[in-house]
Length: 109
Image (cartoon, rainbow, N blue to C red):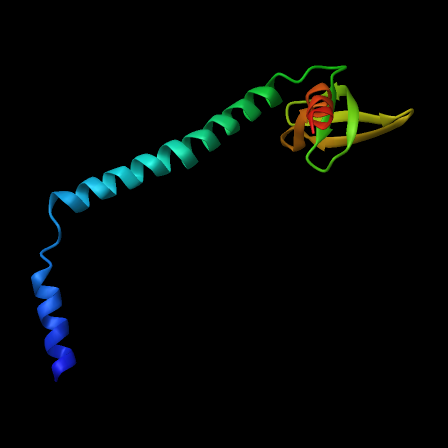
């Protein structure tokens, strides 16, 4: 019986916090947006613009790590030459980065 009394008095004494809890919630949403959602959306936008700007002859790296040169382009696919007379067809969305950027990232580490 004593435990029930303590729980009832504890729940009745805290009246929700009022404006303090709203400020805390607003700060949490603000931090969540600026440190997680916004950078991820910015990166996705940059990736979409890169995929749309791929040109014939450009060297690219796929998300699977395959390096090659774009030989032919369609609306949704690319024909990538990975070695002499070896070509593979991949989806545009699977292109990860331009080869020169990938090379620059490797030399920086």
